[in-house]
Image 1 (spheres, helix red, strand yellow):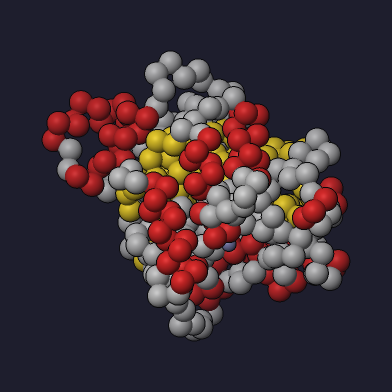
Image 2 (tube, protein in one colour):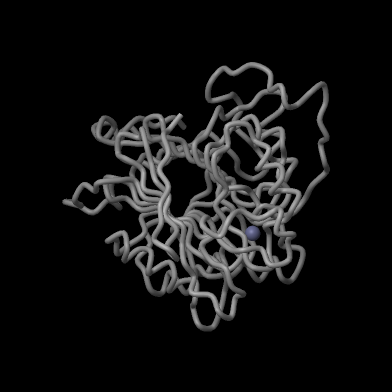
Length: 353
Ligand SMILES: [Zn+2]
């Protein structure tokens, strides 16, 4: 499906194929009269080693990929709500499940009880249904989303106003063709390992958001094998400005990371989850990288493989943690952006590539 901006397609809805449901839903889900905002905002909400990445577009549309953990105290839902309040948003237009693990969709039920959610997007049925844990997570997801669940394929797009939101991986598949002609990826060399992988991480949904020159890539917990499918022999994605490092910073393929040439990497690790030395080194060795931001100081990792405290949102162990987020504010023309550490209020500014 290749959807052009919603406004230009509205008149064609009568002849719409079933696959263009996303467009219909986006039109239906957008609050009339939503005021234009001064920026595109991205929040990496701290869910202690899980994921919850909130995007609010300049047109006021909201997309949340993942919702943290299932907890009796609904901690992660409340942290997401705090980010929504900060953004001046009271609903989520699209919830996207990157994959069906407890650190990504466990918190969905509590969130859905507190915040109106328009539609639920995922990669397809869980591939972890043979284990009790996997089946429980999957069934809880189905219960939370009801009949508002839709599965996408690589190449599908959310028709958001004024920006491109393209799904690049889903259910183990990737884009068939590169987004731009870049030729062979020199970081692949003559051959590259093709690990045999199974489980939900290997089928993670991933997306690329483009606003003018600005590009943000979030691949959920994509495994090394899935990253290689995007990278070798040809990098299918081009360069990006901000890269949410897959799988909380563990299992990072240099062939993809170095070909993406991110300016900024964000690692959504917890105090004892993700943020490993090997992944950090791969990211740090990426050409043109300026900064690595981390959700947490990784307490079990050698300090040589951590970013600075200035670029770390949370320094303590989970029990003492205040759940500070990292926030990117992207100029609506896409030419520049800043990233803020909510713990300190300090920001750094960057130019888009
Ligand atoms: Zn995870």
